[in-house]
Length: 263
Image 1 (cartoon, rainbow, N blue to C red):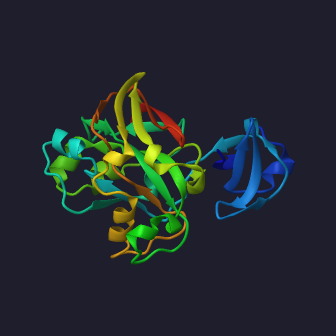
Image 2 (image 1 turned 90 degrees about the horizontal axis):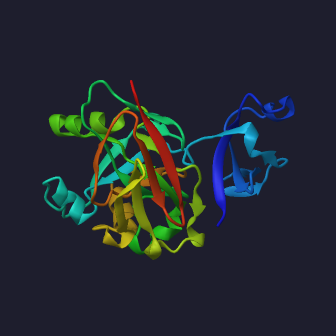
């Protein structure tokens, strides 16, 4: 499995490396990174870098994060909601992104912060009005997402922007993997809270599979390369506390782990 990462150099990096400022892409290989131009042009782009000299960033770098609500029937039911008859779409801002190992901040405005483990799709090219049968033509690869949610604010507001849009509310896997290297039908979404598995379901339980999701979204907006689609969370969501550690894993894709800290 080829694991693609985004990274910047940290303060330990030699000056000969830090001359290349800004975020870069690379392939993770045995404690080293082999730089590439980007996800969509993976030609080599410089010398191999020791992992100890870098900070890994969220694997996705989207212009927008498009999310699907209540896409597993049992999750809709556990929150007392009707199972939707068409994809329920909302957005998270790119400012909500957090990397593996970053802290998730428990905002003072909320008293009920939940984890929601999900499979993420990274868009490969501009997409508008696509045929659901051709969805793989528009997806570069997969990553993991934790759709962190202030459940009390979500319910209070009626719309979801505030409850799901705080800074750090979208932890995203430390790497992404190309779609052609993964058997989608074999994937499962798992979440671990303080070492206990609290979510575990196959992606085949989705009400709306990726083709239906992308066809629906691209009826009303254009997806761009690098955009992130969070495909919905399975049952088992619940509260996190300050001091908790949450790990979302999709075996065969990767994981993202974060600690919860006070604002």
